[in-house]
Image (cartoon, rainbow, N blue to C red; front, side, top):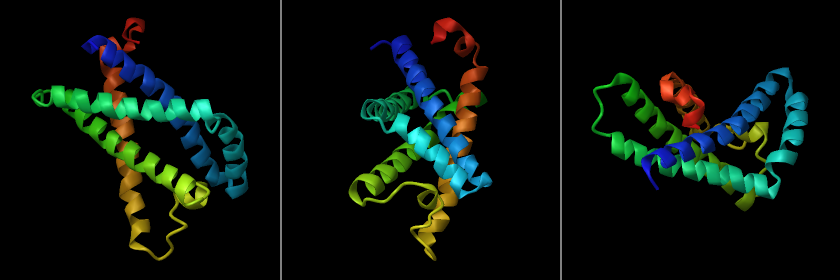
Length: 166
């Protein structure tokens, strides 16, 4: 696959995944309105994103993001003089880590351990008084900061804003 198609695939899968991430983050913010409000939106969203073809698409998008992102990281490794490029590459690596760790933890908890991956799971409620619970803070921080930096870098590049880039 040539470089232009490869980058388009990365952008399209990122846009699909981004729509899920936005809904997921809104759902997490609903916890500020209470556990019941969070649960109500979670149940509504799960009808959509746990529909097997949709879930398969989202997992495929995660894999495309990680594989294509790591390829672009390897190709851009020598271009460290440009600060924006360096920020995009490093934030992409942070996102790859976060996506692999987060998605695999959720799938193992849900599929292997039979744990409901709800608000209690997200805040480490299954690990009371555990050092593991404290590891969630840097984990989520890496994910959120990497996402914001990576998307910002992508949107600031002029070709990312043109319809032909997608």
